[in-house]
Image (tube, rainbow, N blue to C red; front, top):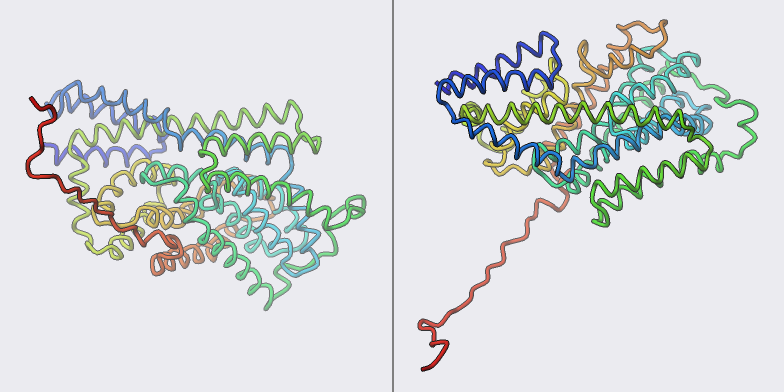
Length: 462
């Protein structure tokens, strides 16, 4: 009976999601319905469902998850206080006289903003509002401009301290510090390849991204460029570096590092006269909404997973995955192809909370390094935000893009950057050291042999 109910549970969830119902409530509702079925059929006893209380306790007491509100608040504050706009203006002055200069600035600002917001939708919307109108007015090719804006925003998927990496660390049960370390080189690879792609396109055809004389107003031009870069770029970048360093070197826990970032952001906004009650309230409202969505997703996914395991669904999935190649590379390749297909229909959070908990135990059993697999999945699922026609980043960009830009231009602009992301996934699979560095050399177990005498003398002599 369980062998039939478990697949039916997944099939019902897929149908409900395709019908457009909210993910969190769909997970919880299906878990409730099949929980009743499990009690009626005797698949598990009523006390089994009480384990959900312990799961809730684990969610609210998890150190990694406690960092999410802090990092979201930090990023939203930086966006709402217009610090991101200042960074773009400073980089615009630096690169504006180069062909494709605004695109270079967009990539770099996208990388910095992504590391601050940690949330793809927020980054894409911010970049779309800040840089896309400037590129359109400068005469940029619409496909190139929208592709740059969407790809820059999706860097929030992989650049630490990414919200996505925090969730992956929790779902794959790996150290958050380790996954932050492992994501550094892949992040730099993506940024470098994006810049190289823009250079290659504009080198042969400068008219795709013409240079402009200046992006700043005359009053702004009176400020020396080095001072503008130091104030607009140096302080926010230094703040993010301080947060990452405090977490990476074990000085602070992830939640403490997030608190440091929030405190620094508030001080930075106050110093620049940008922190008003209205902006602070808007940042708090946005943070509360995002955190509430994530909490409901976690609770729904946890309840769904509990009931699914009650029907031995995890064993059914393991038997199903046993049909895949049992060597590590073959398994990783096919799992990434599966996730790539699922990304056409499901977004990252649906995959993270539904699919990854089913994959992780099998990967662990095969001895796959979970940090390596997590970073590969993060880059792979980056494409889920840019897949035409369902990519969330494309929808976000369409909502803020000028009406002169067609939806087809947005879709075609995303294609080359999706190819770059695929290339990075392949490189990470072929060269694990790009993620693991020295982690694959595990410390040999230290054997301690204690020789005990054959007959212990009496402790008390009579």
